[in-house]
Image 1: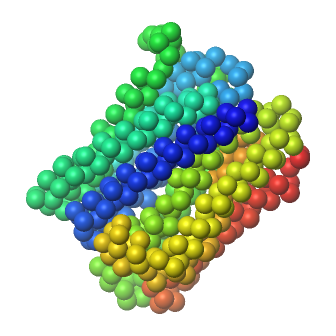
Image 2 (image 1 turned 45 degrees about the horizontal axis):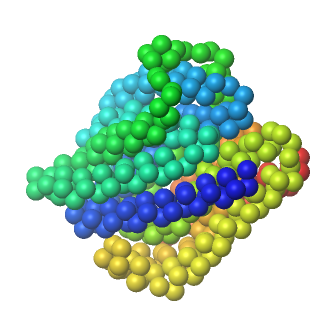
Image 3 (image 1 turned 90 degrees about the horizontal axis):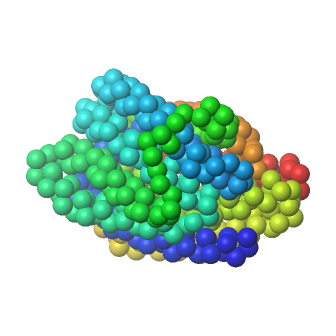
Length: 430
């Protein structure tokens, strides 16, 4: 198991590094193609996109990974019996998004250019959902190579389409280009699904009858997935409400819509994107950690469980600390090199140290899910999100611009990390 964990982590780190480099190239091409204004508009719809991505899979990838790693049920049945249910659910999500998009764009985001991009999100959901479910299967089997390859292919397809389709659409309008940015997810996720299906063992055939609803298995999956989804949903809902509250409060205190759109785009498109670059490393560790901790904890091998969690946190900090120092000292270089801008440098120098805590959140959250503490993780996220939104509302009325948003975010990161650390190490069966 130790060798498997190390091998899985190395594969995911290498794959994550390649995917992150490709992601950086995509970001470079995107920011230079749709400009800062386009990034600002895309940043306004991104919280809604993330919210519906969270909803579309209902946390099933984590639940599938956990059940398969415990090796107690038929693997094929676990995966395929959930597909009819989740596809019907995704269809309902698509319909709901089509109905609420006009209200979101006009009354909450106060930008009519977000209307059609918001509607386009609905078309991508089934592809994102199926891709994540298949990845959950491979994670549970501790086979990280298929997921790694699919992620790289997905990013390559996205990069090619950003270079060609999005650039072409800019000739028509900025709005068309942003719609293109959303819709290319259909082809990139579709490519990912085809790659993953190619790694399914040849001896395992799939028949239409395999997609049969199984009440017992679905109940077991939902018992795990719903608290996990609840945790992610709270975070996504908080992120969804963020630009709405920010726009409302700042416009009331005299800031223009153009200022809010541009500065919000700088923070999300440049600042957060740069500071979250090391997250591919910590998420790779978290994904490799989940089946290992789930298996050892269910077998009551607590000393080994604790050792692996500590090891994962240590490795995360080993990467996070040097990256934080580099961002603080050479932030302007990285902004210029990646995004061809120096916008957001003042923000980075202040908030980079707190993002160290964010780098260890992934392993801590994965550990809580693996140990059956998804409900506790959900409550921690809920409390942190409430604090964040209240702070955002209050601080945005103090006429300090975007610093209210950044302060609220940093408090949220600190609270959730301390909460998860407490439940993993201080309130446990170790």
